[in-house]
Image (cartoon, rainbow, N blue to C red):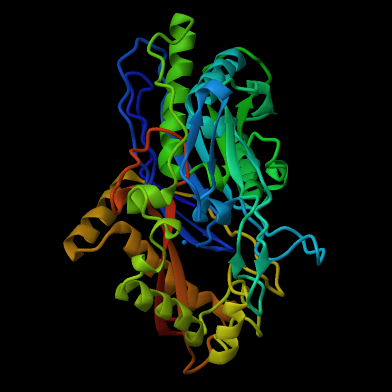
Length: 457
């Protein structure tokens, strides 16, 4: 995880920003560009803030949201991207005894120059759960189809018991259900090591939220120096972890902005006078992008255009280019036989599916100075490219230097498939305005190559 240009700001009046980051995960390569929100001015204690984030990533049926305040809850069936993150199992699990497909974790850290009291932080967390439905939700339904109709048992027909978000209007949880505190004896360096280890483990370990039918699907871990419950002038770190089905980085930026600002107000004034607006159940990503009543269940084959057919055909053909799968072994990194690669992809054994090698996320934490970050941005603008695409190119070229353990094979060329994370609020009808915690993350696959080994040099 690379943090570009640490951000130093006041919590209130606040414009809490985050950094542009990239992270390599076993499921793909993710880039996230944060959003920020301006809050009303309040007298408060100030915190200097910087943040970093990451997400493990994969790749596009659903009914519209149902808000039933009189019945005590709001509900909505999960959309396709949320099902991949939750996940709805990739293969049958009951009749063949297969384990659940792994859940996708979303992890983000915010470091503060001072440590809030446990009481103030707990109050701010409970306000946040009252504000955002998916922070107090659980999932009902197993998502099992009536039948699977293809050779690999991946094409589904019917969904009698769909996975459904259910968020009680009265919050059933307390701050103690999501807040964990890690007391650290030592200095700032010990603090940094603590939250980085937590970050590293959390990105691959979703075992703590596997019981989605109970909830909550997120937690916040406070890493602090000492063991006092009151506030202090020592730095701390707030590490947000969730099932990726309920969050993306843009909305978590909004959430952390709210929590930190509310903490500052509580510690200064004893309460939050300017409370956030209580939000309803967020719409599905498909509705935000396509507009209402434009899902497959609404349009059927009438919604298929030539571009859609070309896109699906192109995705199916990607396997024939035999992209590299990491981590590399002599068997898996070769870029291999194109037909075998295609069959591997189709059968779910590509990155993000099954593998003979256990893939785990590789993270390296690094800070770039404001000066270096500015030079990178200026260079990208001068060349007419985005920072994200510059980082994509750098990552791909670097991979060619280290593939097969860095042992160059003369004349060897390979294809590299890079998955970019997208904020889907910026596409199509753009109906979701990032006012509540939700997953609006999409993806864009880039096939780069063939690149000769050691191209990065």
